[in-house]
Length: 356
Image (cartoon, rainbow, N blue to C red):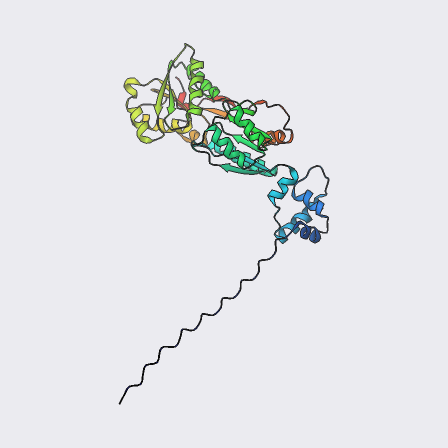
C-alpha cells in the first residue's frame, strides 16, 4: 500500500512581541521645584546655587531643598556655568608618590572643606605628563581653580594657559612657587633641620639621613637632607643613606651598620624610622644606646613602639584654612599672587634618642 507523503513541519510560531518600554519620566525642572515649594524660580536658583548675596530665610531654604530632593531635581552644571561665567570645578591632580597618613589626612580635609563651599573637586591622574601637557589637559576641563601638588613642575606660561581657559586661581602646594600662581609653601628643609639639630643637641656628631629610593619622594627627601646639612654646618657630619621602603632594604642597611653606620639617624619619616629601627634591633644593635633613631610626622604608632620614637611634629593648616584661601583667590582673581607659608616643624624628643 503506498505511503502517504510526509507533510512539511509547521512553521515556527513567531515570538511574542516585546512589550514596549514605558517612556522615561521627564526630568524635573527648576519650575517644578518652584511650584512644589511655593516660591519663585529665582529663589530656587539662589538656594540651590548657594548664593550669598541674597538673604533667604532658613525655612525657605529648607523647603526648596526638600522639594528638589522629592522631585529628584539635579541642577544642570553646564547651564549653571554659563550663567556664572565659570565652573565650580577645583582640579586636584592625584599624587604620583605614596602619600603618608599626615599628608593624606590633610588632602581629605581640604576636599571636604571645598565641598562645603560648593566646589566640585575633580582628581586628575596626571602621571607621566610634563608641565605643558598637564596644563593643556587640565585646561580642557575649564576648572575655576587648580591646586598643583608640586610633583609636576609648572612654568609661568603653564599658569597663563590655565588662566586663559578660565581658571581664576592657580595654587601650588609644595616647596617652591611659580610666577603667576599663589604659592602655598611647605618648607621640607625645616623638617630636616629640626631633626638634625635635635640629634646634635644630644651630642651626636655623625648623623645618617635616610634618602628613600622610591621614585618621586625626592621632592620631600632632598630638601630634608639639605635642612640637616644646614643644621650640621661644620659641627656634625651628615651621611646620606639610600634605603627603599622594604624589609630587605632595611635589613641590608642594618647589616652594614656595625662597621660603617653612624651613631644617629634621621630616617626621613616615622614609617621609614620604624622599619629601620626593627632591622637595627634584629642585628643586635640597641636603640638609642648604639644608634639614636629619629623620624618625622609624629604618627600615633611611633608612640606605641619601645623605645618610643623621637620625631618631628609637622604643623599643617586645616583643610578649612586652605579651602578659604582657594575661595578667596577665586572670588578676587585680580589679587596679586602671594606666598603663604603653610607648615612649621618642631622636634619631639622621646626614648629613641635619649642620652645617658
